[in-house]
Each structure stands twice: as structure tokens, then as C-alpha cells.
Image (cartoon, rainbow, N blue to C red; front, side, top):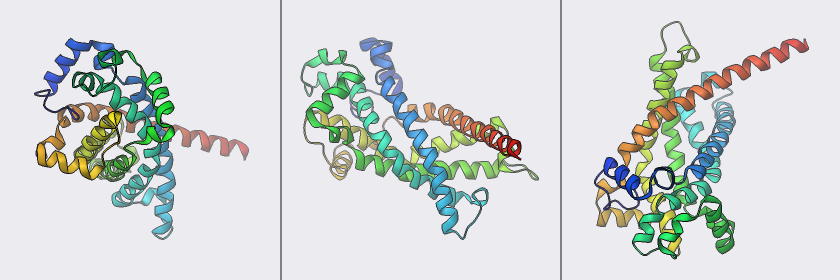
Length: 276
């Protein structure tokens, strides 16, 4: 829906046509492996550097404790952390976008080999890009990724922390709100992220797909062309399915993050006590 907006009326139409033409494995789950790789690598790097950036922001703010950072300071930490996670995300996003848009590219005659190219998998496509363009070929769309990720994760962590504060009962801390409220806060964070960054995501997806047939266009060129030729609404094409997807996904993400952090802290305290 992002890269070929004229082919589908809405999310349901895209779903049904994709299922009818390519089935489940090669259609609805095209790009699953690079998508998993993207999410695992991005979140590992993101949350690692989120902690590092929280320490940096706390130091800049006069040596505050990380636990006392306000939502704005946590949001800044998230935006800074996204700079580093973009390097892990860009290559896998590139492979995912190209695999998902292959049928449309082949149908329009923009892909050598035509529909036969649909048989290529993530590993084959990665080898092909590396052979033809080297490592730089996997980083097409990196600037657009920065422009999407850094402001996006500013809102992501900002929405999460604001939601936690609002749902914290009197007399308790934000770490004691429970699993359900954590999932709700995480879901709201995901919605905030995608609403804020979706135009940049549309531009990034088009750059990465269009780069298969030549020199990739710049972020500014693609953005202006979309506005002129398709109008502002095209920048939000596909937002509905994304919001439906992201609420449970990011809710589960933050629940896993907070739970893991809690038990690792308990384990660390146990080891420290055992030494004494």
C-alpha cells in the first residue's frame, strides 16, 4: 500500500488480492525472515543504547538518577538511541521491502526476470545485492531511516513514559502498574510512533524499492513527488493496518522489556548479596 498506492483500495483489498495471487507463504508472509531479523537486531541495539543514552542525558542534566528522568528526558534518550539502531535496521528493512514489493515491480516491468523473481528468498536477494553493489547496496535509504527512526523513537519513549505516569496510582511507582497497564502504555507508544513517522516510512519504503532499478532517489525528491502527484493523503497510505498491528506488538515488546529488566535486576541483586 505504501509503494503502490493505486493498486489497492484499502487494507482489506490488499490482503485479499495478496492472498489470492501469492497465497500465505509467498504473499502474506513475504519478507518474514528479514522482518524478524530487523525487529530482533533493532530492538536489541535500541534498548541497549537507550540505557546508555539515559545515563548520558542524566549526566548532562546535573547527575540525576535514571529513575528520576522525566518523560521529555526519556524521549530524548530514545531519539538518540535510534541513531545507533538505524544501522542494524536499514539492511534488513531493505530486503523486506524489496521482497514484499516484488510482484508489483515485476508486473510493472521494473524487475529483470519478471515473475520468476518471486522465487528468490531473503538469502538469495542479499547475496545478489552484495555481489552487485557491495555492502553500500544494503544501506540504500539510510538517511531516510535516520529521519524516520530518531523522531519516531522520541515519540515512542515519550508516549510510553507519559502513559505510565498517567496510569500510576497514588502511592505507587511507575514500575508497579502491572502487566495490563504496561501493555496498554506500550501499545499507545507504538501508535504514537507510527502516526508521527508514517510519512517518512512511506518515503523510505519507496526509496528502497525504487533503488532496485537504478540509482536511488533522494528523500527530498521522493517526498516532493508524492505531494505533487498523489497529495498528502498518500503519505499515510497503509497507516490503518500498521496501527492495528503495532498496538499488540509494542504492548508485548514493553511487557517483555520491563519483565526482563525486573528479573535481571533481581538476579544481579542476588549475585551481589551472595558475594557478601
